[in-house]
Length: 122
Image (cartoon, rainbow, N blue to C red; front, side, top):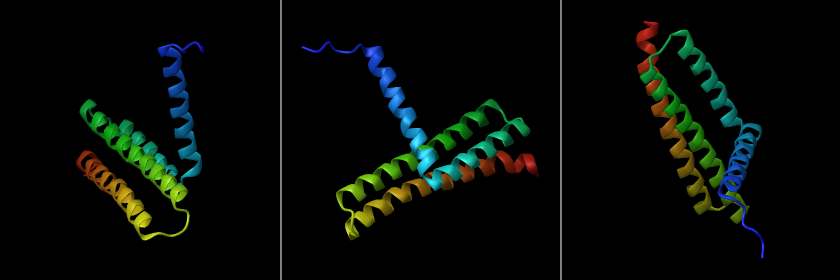
């Protein structure tokens, strides 16, 4: 009988897998590279304009949401391609819906950015 690993050891492994996944996303996906670059610019803008704690929280939630949705979208695309490598209308619909979720998150993140930064710029 194999000795079960401790709860802490399993959590550390899980964090390692998650970190590996984040690096894979950043290295593989052009769209998340662009989103990461935009996140860095917006973070720099936050320091430049000295945004409030509440604005930081909302900004970071928006960045996290967009990047997380992009990761989920990429996972959906990978699963869909694995299940059905050749073109398929139903798989295309599934991919479009996943991309639409990223689009919604991105549009609302842009609106949040405008709400935070337009008053500071003008």
